[in-house]
Length: 289
Length: 151
Ligand SMILES: Cc1cc2nc3c(=O)[nH]c(=O)nc-3n(C[C@H](O)[C@H](O)[C@H](O)COP(=O)(O)OP(=O)(O)OC[C@H]3O[C@@H](n4cnc5c(N)ncnc54)[C@H](O)[C@@H]3O)c2cc1C
Ligand code: FES
Ligand code: FES
Image: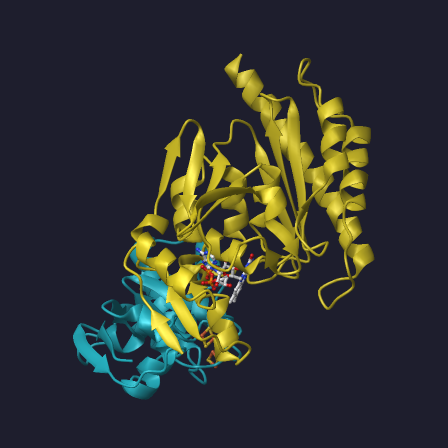
């Protein structure tokens, strides 16, 4: 095995071009488990923790460009206001030790259906910036996940950053787990209100081969949310939304939960989180007026 | 490969480090620092918790090569010579140590918490220690120890 230690992004991309089989190593919270248990024996490891270009974030024109190597802990403390749902999802990841090392770039690289950041990236319309020595391209979160633990990166590409709009309205993330800390999601859900376009994003995790948007549920919200005459949401709207979210799922039975339970839990999460987000929106409308 | 790392304030060097090796293995097996415990090697138990550049991490999930040129502080580095760190002393006084396997990781995690939050609430203590498992104490004495060290 080789241990490659690029000092900047250009070196990292050159290394990946030359050694497409090199496994990128960010926080290591997924990769090291596989190495420790002999599940993976790559020819080379490509340590990205010295690449300064991946380690920061900037805001421009209402969009956060979040470097692939920013830890969850930093995201929570530095970006909680701008990216509330992503911060909520980050708070549910592992433990402090895991959050101190783990990154959104690594969550994307692993592309697990259960990754906590994915529903948020989908619901907020995030885009993933990837680069190689051939150039840079943007992948919509929608097109990023292509199968169980499979993403749409070419072998010579690295994830550089994630672009997410600064939240202009309430967002929510919720996860069902068997206890409060240190659990992989049984299922998870994110919703993000978008008053400017009079719509809302909604996406599920851990309930299909890939994280995915609940498109019908989103269309329903676009038609039903009373943006022009803001009032509390009728129960029937929340309930129907929950049903549509659950119908977007294609879960499996596994040790963490049955398919049936996952669908039920998603409907509940969807109903509740929409209620919370809309209530917050009404509150903020009133304080603005 | 060769790895150079500052451990508990001292420059250390290790040779013939395997590229896929963890920082935990490097510390325990090559540098003779068995304080950080190896229990799960998958980030679940926290007994290998050390500071890496001042941030608590699971040493089993850091590649040894990632620590090159960085600073590591282990549970061995918390005591001042023969004088235990207040968190260590408080674990002893409160009887928060039984078999002791989880203790080094918990001490480092609690040490970090009290550095950041000198007077944590019970909720904050529980959250800060959520990544550390103990199979003996039932956690109550551990909570007592952290509360006492905060005073
Ligand atoms: C105890 C424990 C608890 C956990 N709990 C959770 C949880 O609650 N929720 C959750 O979602 N996850 C959880 N995880 C999984 C893991 O922490 C996350 O997936 C994390 O986001 C991975 O980030 P990392 O930086 O550590 O990635 P790494 O382990 O370094 O890499 C992960 C994958 O991404 C690739 N990669 C990394 N960076 C890049 C890049 N820039 N470009 C291309 N590919 C890249 C790697 O090659 C690898 O395939 C847990 C893990 C552990 C050990
Ligand atoms: S040995 Fe590292 S967390 Fe358990
Ligand atoms: S004292 Fe035995 S595991 Fe905690």
